[in-house]
Amino acid sequence: MEAINGDKLRGHLETMVLSTLESGQAHGLEILHRLEDAGCGQLRLKEGSLYPALYRLEAAGLVKAVWEKEQHGRRGARRRYYSLTPRGKRRLNAGRVEWQQFVRVLGPIMGAPV
Amino acid sequence: MIESSLTQLKIIVERAVRPVRASSSLKRKMREELLAHVTGVFEEEAAKFSNERAALEHTAQRFGNPLEVTGQLQESVPSIDAIWRFFEGHPEESMLCSAWRFVWVETLVCLVALGLCLFLAGWKTPWSLKELITVFSAFPLIPLWLIQIPLALSAIALLMCWIENSLRGTQLLPASNLNGLFKSFASAWAVPAVRRAMIGGGVGLLMMFMVSFVIAQWPTHPWGREHWIAIFSMMPMMSGVAVFSVFFAWLLVRPVSDRRRHHAEWSSLPIEKASW
Image (cartoon, rainbow over all chains, first blue to last red; front, side, top):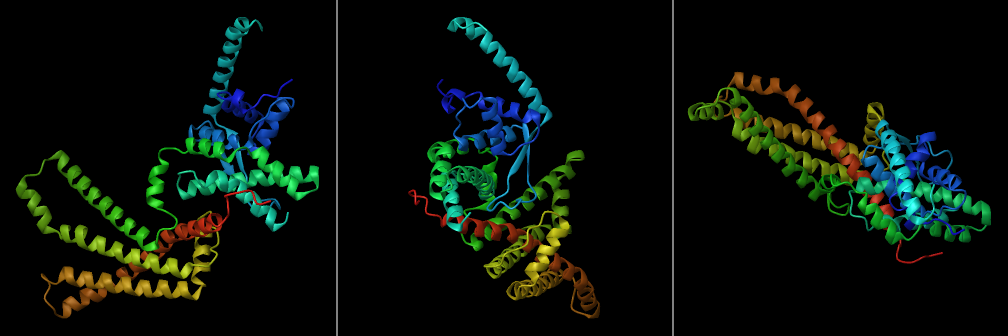
């Protein structure tokens, strides 16, 4: 099966990121691993694109971020840990409802009812 | 990880971040976070390939097209960041430029605050023209707001330039809380050039404050013993203000100096073509 890449994910990436944060706070690379694990290896993201999405979510108050205090032996830079805000949880629930409706409406049109 | 690999990882990040039009502090945040990301990816790839060159190539591929990432990062810059960009100025502009921008913006803020105070004071009982003239003439309001405050701010701006020049090449301690801030100040104070700038600037500010006090008093207070006592009794307070001003100048210089060092480090990276 062909992998799902960045273009097909457009418009859904932010809800997907919110969904990965439901299981607890995570830094960017961990969010990416969670997305890939949940996508069973069928998801191909250009990794640099994840951070603009995280910044947009942060600016909208849907996630909050804190810098890690130590680099844990890694050279170069600190990571930022993201977690869901109450507003982000509400947005995630709304995003799930929208997605279910989207699939319910488009599925029969595509000849692939749910 | 060897030093050259870390530099190559920085180049991957810098290709995407450098063209973004954003404040230095926002770009710094992007750089640090993206560098932490590509470092993590590089470690994963290095474990797979046991060849740093191949690991670097795969890291760059996973990161994506820098042009696309630049566009997406640009879209994520909030509009309020334009205000920060204005206050921070360009990282390559001279400290004098930044300092003068600080002077005129602060003067403008003071004048707006004055206007607001007068407006609020006259809100309940509107002032007549006669009352307004009385307020302005009874207190040295115009000289204070139009001459003394801009003059004091200009002196602080010059002191900022002096401290910033003396801080070049000095690594300041990071400060995440008040205690850290005082430790950072102490580390700066330990540098002889910075100490000279602070003491010289503080004495200069004290003299300027005293002279402006004397000038403000002069038309109404003729020279005499009482006038001298009044001048000397102001010395402790003026000294306190001068010490506070030095600390304030250092507080303003600290992030500027830090930003310049960060900008110098990243802007020297050659981002034009792949170099591995």
